[in-house]
Image (tube, rainbow, N blue to C red; front, top):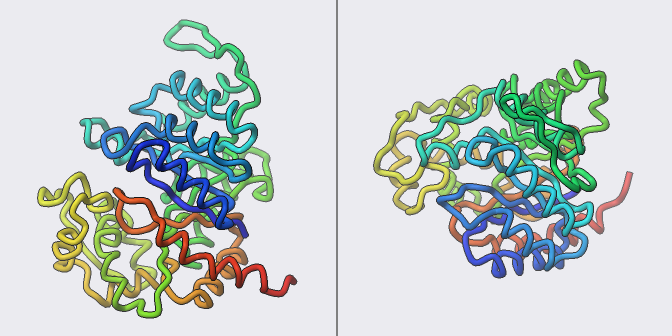
Length: 340
């Protein structure tokens, strides 16, 4: 099982690149960078710096989008990073929530994702592509990076299996939701005449090493509320979490998951998400616990068919140094674990 870490480009590119180098040194196999042009520095500038600062770790976007970035512009940026990273870059794509909403755009529809990915495939593969009647190609495309798609709903999960090299699963590590998500990706792969074994299955989850999960789970309330707010109530209900959250919450900027004042967001979300709900969310969907407890959960995720897990810390405007360092003990225990 490969472990990765999510690094928001929340500071100068050299600073974030140094964190990527630290992640590589600590034993992480993957480093993922989100893309949201108003929240963080440019993801491709940051990726370039990270590629120069590292040697082995896989680098990827988790995720960029096809709305604020035209497919032709995105293809050129991806090609450029892929040349520097030399086989270590993965282009992760999504509908663009935190990128598009703050600038008055709508997230990509499933049809738009399919069309945009086809254009990217063509350009990165050196093909001529039609742009409103104009045929164009990407000069010197090089070796195309793998394309992955972040998804949680059944339609996008099937699409990921059909047209990309793998799925970034956004529903956490719940065994039930993992099994359901994997089955939908498999349906898409089968429709395209492909095997699920040929695809990467990356699971995104919030993580925290702690011996008091009940105390620290409170910090997850905005995450839990944000998931419910954008239609994830059915997934939460699997763990007995039933919350209703208003569609618009003007007190929080820019949104619940990326709240600038996290403590205030935690207090505000307490009216919809109880302490018990937060605890259920932490134990069912997240990697919260002692190193031994986390190691056992990682083994469950691997058994469910995931190829890697990447960790997120709570909050979007700091680097997860504490989370990375706290996983040193987890890595040590992974290396000591008997191999089957």
